[in-house]
Image 1 (cartoon, rainbow, N blue to C red):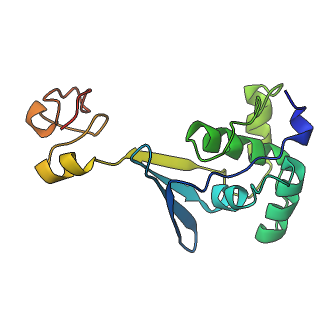
Image 2 (tube, one colour):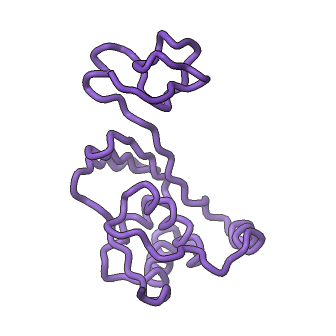
Image 3 (tube, rainbow, N blue to C red):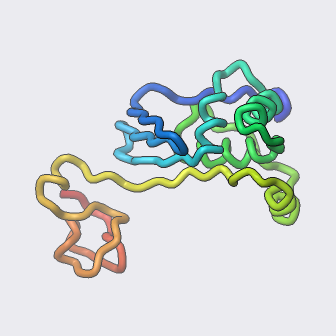
Length: 160
């Protein structure tokens, strides 16, 4: 495994539909039927993942973009979220290894920059959308709303 300092993350571009808005980026993953909303900080970091920049270089570039210092640990927090959501070509090694929860919170507390956030939702398959039923993981109030016919506050398993 490469040393963490030399990690050069690369954003995934294939199989995605990307819509950039003023303060966020919407990314639809065609392979997984998932929609992701990247806040401004996560979006700036993701856009800097070109496979040739280190996390330290990304932090400096995002600092310049925001006109405010960004700690490299912010980049690792974003990379962890981006990796878990399959928005990077390779999942980075131990993104915030060696940092305990207190250290992460301290890094977040001393910055006026928004914490990088990747929010994701499951998009219905075309068949589910046509039937009007809700897919697995969607919030529901009755089993009749779910394609699987099973509701426990959210639709459980199954498809259209």
